[in-house]
Each structure stands twice: as C-alpha cells, then as structure tokens.
Amino acid sequence: MLLYLLHTCPFGHRAAMVVREKNLHVELRFYEPGKRPPELDAVGPRAKSPTIFDGETRVYDSAVVLEYLEERYSQPALMPKDVSQRASVRMLIARYNDEIGSKYSALLTEIVFKKERDEAKIAEVKKAFLDALVPWNEYFKGRTYAVGDALSLADITLYTFFPSVKAHANLDVPPELTHLRAWHDRMKSRPSAEVPSPA
Image 1 (cartoon, one colour):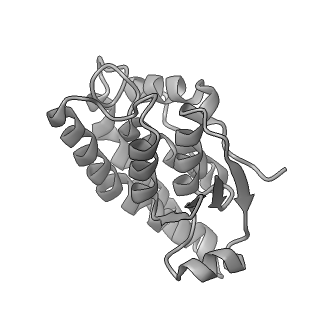
Image 2 (image 1 turned 30 degrees about the vertical axis):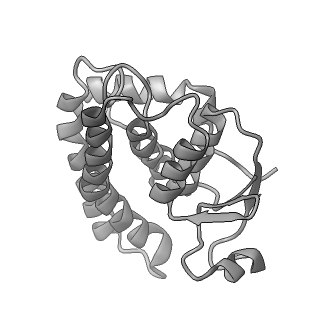
C-alpha cells in the first residue's frame, strides 16, 4: 500500500495515524506543495494529500480514505459497533470541520499562502482558532475519547489539526483548557500520533 501525503498536512496525518493504529504495511510517499507526482495526476485533480494506492484501488479525500481503511481493514476497529455511536462519530467529524477546520484554513491562508504577511490579520485568525477550542474543553470533560470508551476516527480527525497548527503557527492547546489539553496529551502519547516526516 502506498500513501501519498504532504508533510505537516493534518489530512495526510490522519491517514497515517489510521494505518499505524491498524498495523498496516504502508509506504509513505511525500511530495511538495504544488508539485503533485505524475501518479496522482493520473488519478485526477482531486487526488491530493492523502491518496491511498491499495493494489488496484485508488482512494482520495481524507474522510473517504479513513472510511475506506476502516471498512477494508476492520481490525482493530476505529468505529463503534453501535449504530448511534457511529452516527455520533460522523457528526462530530462534521462539527470539527465546521468549527475548527474553517479556522485552521483561515490560519494557513494568512501564514502559509499569502505572499505578504499581515501581522494584525494573523493575530486575528490565531485568536479565532483558539476561541474555537473553548467549547471543546467542556465537551471533553470526563471523557477519555470523543465517543464512547475507545479511540475512534473522531479522535484522530480532531487531533491531527494540532500538530499542523503547532508547526505553522506555533500554537498549542492552552493549558487553561484542562480537559481538552488532557485529551490532546493522551492522543499525543500514542505511537501512531507521531507526525509523519520524509526520511
């Protein structure tokens, strides 16, 4: 299996975490932003970070990649057996993307993609990202994992925003957000959580 991804990309990081949690043999193939390899071009314009080559199967889009890996390699499971909890995982992922992912995108736009830095705007989007974390502190009060009693795709999806934000904007989960911080630190301690890097 081949996994194409960008370094510090949270979406690629998610796929790498899943294959590690499932103990799958995978070869990581990194490419530079704006320089997709010919193999991805051959798949199509939406084949970005992450894209999985699994035998003759090609899968892209991080949410689809994670679901594919879960369905194709079901053990250890990263989705609950209970159908209502499975729905909770999917709803949380959608909520993360809306509440935190949108702030993450705005942050990267200002710090990474704009040619000229606007320090006032950067400060504004940093604050917006940190403000978006506040409701999640209460959510994780008394919880070890995002849904139920086991690691799920919801935990992996949320966690992978943070190493990327740390790399690009030098932001951490504030220590005063004690419940979110405790969850973050538990996730960070998992061997699968290490940010994948080119050799």
